[in-house]
Length: 148
Image (cartoon, rainbow, N blue to C red; front, side, top):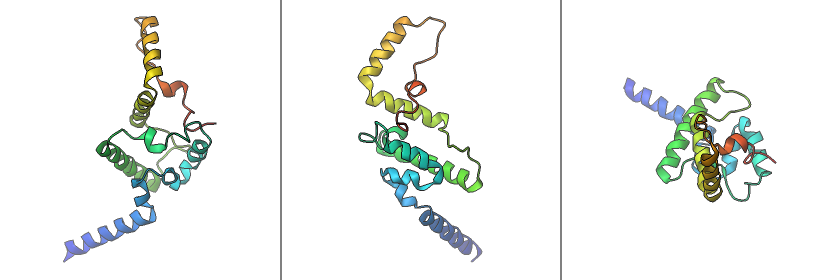
């Protein structure tokens, strides 16, 4: 009986937390779900005024392509966000992790492939052999999705 009670309490707390945190909304592509947390309000507001507002939602830039990859990424981020927000262990303003920065970089390159190929080709032809720094879209265009 003790294990059943413990399992029931865990399921009850988990269900309540999922409902309270609007967990089902994170399974959609609706950008308002990303603004459920107060730390994302600025990013959401800036996105609504950005050049990408009409052509991309949060998942287009911040999750990898493909059903399984997308939802694994969302689950990973959801877990990390829930732990950070519950414990208070997050930086304000919120900052992108290196893992998610790499996903976003690849999504930029995917959507803007023709121009990226031209830039990469030019950079490769003019790069000094000692310069091994790669061209990064979001290093120079870091406010495109969340800026004016």
